[in-house]
Amino acid sequence: MRWDGSRVLVTGAAGFIGSRLCLRLASLGARVHGVSRREIADDTCVWHTADLTDADRALELVRSVRPDVVFHLAAEVDGSRGTETLMPTLTNTVVGSVNLLNAAHDLGARVVMAGSVEEARPELGETLTSSPYAVARWAATGYARLFHQLWSLPVTVLRIAMVYGPGQPDTTKIVPYVAVCLLRGEEPSLTAGKRRMDWVYVDDVTEAFVLAAEKDDAVGRVFDIGTGEGVAVRDIVTRLYELAGSTATPPFGTRPERVMDVERFAHVEEAAEVLGWRATTPLDEGLRRTLEWYGRRP
Image 1 (tube, rainbow, N blue to C red):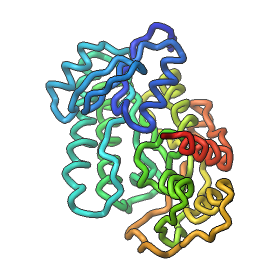
Image 2 (cartoon, one colour):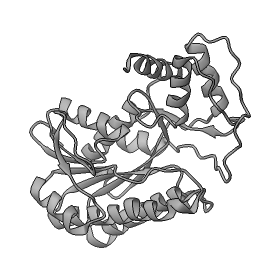
Image 3 (cartoon, helix red, strand yellow):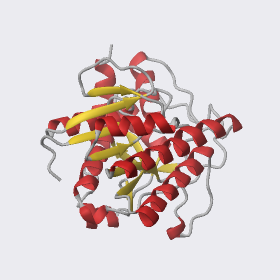
């Protein structure tokens, strides 16, 4: 894959990972086209406004851009256990992905698609799913495999662990939430924080997307993207307190635990072997950079 002068399409380009990926691709010389459901006015890429749940619009978009590679990150990211998340995750994650995959197949474009380690991994004997979001990601991955096996679409899925880092706009997520509270001198509301998660720095994740598009051996495969190690939420919060220079004690247990949480960590061997990728940013360094970024934010 030669990036200089190539045409790439990034869905979910206004999101946390998508925005960082656009910058990385532009630095490689690619002509980056970004897709968002809302109008965006900046010069990071050529922007398109589209709702991928509209099959005709998805096809029109791909035909107009004619990308060499499609990076599909658009989804409904909501870990809530409420029934109100059923339809948004079904339509925005599953239907949107099927429409995008079908449009890419029509043009013959290569696709690298975001998944999640939250989804069940049948090859590892996993069947338990924890949320509508996890089920939707699992279904979208299944459709990606179908498009490759039945219609030879060159698609790769990256099942991503818990991403953190500078620029995360959703400050309800634990790392930016605690960072913002510390910077404002406020006390966060926290669960007991016993759940372990696989924390991976955002720029390491964008590099995995780039490598997945470059490697022919990645086509038709699904890779876990994370560190492979579990760190409890309470340990992350404690590290943030220490990095911020706070002498206060984090108020663990002031918020109830979320039901049906499942601990899943990336199996990193395949990504290392096929993509030549491993997470390289140490956790404390990534958290320090994150705190600094939120400290500079207006």
